[in-house]
Length: 269
Ligand SMILES: C[S@@+](CC[C@H](N)C(=O)[O-])C[C@H]1O[C@@H](n2cnc3c(N)ncnc32)[C@H](O)[C@@H]1O
Image 1 (cartoon, protein in one colour):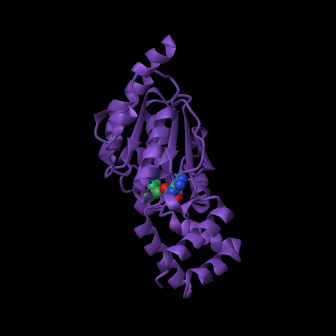
Image 2 (cartoon, protein in one colour):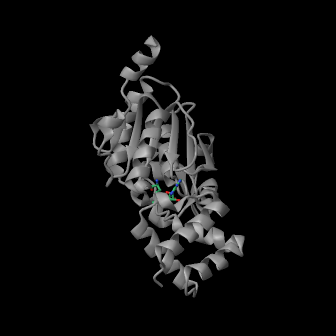
Image 3 (cartoon, helix red, strand yellow):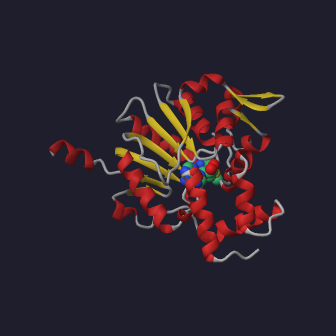
């Protein structure tokens, strides 16, 4: 299948009208390859035929959206970064706010949000909140259950595993008491207005699908959404090349801080 640019445009427009999601923000080569492969898996010979199939059934449309959003994750992904978060970033944030407002943006099935909940509960218990958002409904439903597979738990420090995870028939069940920190909801990072006043935003392994313009807009919106002194934690293969232009300070690789100076500026204005 080799759709023309016009056929792609028609497909994107129809998809946007129906779901509100704008595929134009994603890296096109990668996206097109994935869509063609999905269409062929379903036996379609053209994009028109694929859209006819998807638009005829909510279930198929959901399947497509969920497949589109690759939601690979695991608890304590890149453990050495979580160690830095615990040893250096969280104590600094807690020096300014006793209760942290945190956001796992593109949370998939919740592994990142639960990792943060375990870390906070074990070392810095308090009235913290952790919001997880994603466009993938199936992943969010899984996040709400708080059950993980064997592959998800391999990076969990032994003492946290003993304390917060229980092996059941369904998998590794997270301690329900962690739920007091957590909430999950649907959210599109490319379209939504963001809440403000976050101490910590985690957005890891999400922007790999976005084009440069979408990434830049997103990082600027994260900057606005952080409190002065608040920190953005990105994935281990990600770097914000124009971080200084946006206003971030980068004190350690993969952690970007909104300067405290902003606070002085705000108070003075
Ligand atoms: C590879 S997972 C990353 C999960 C987790 N942050 C981690 O690092 O383990 C990427 C997630 O980004 C989500 N995603 C993709 N586009 C999105 C968008 N526009 N808004 C919100 N989430 C999005 C996908 O649904 C998927 O669950």
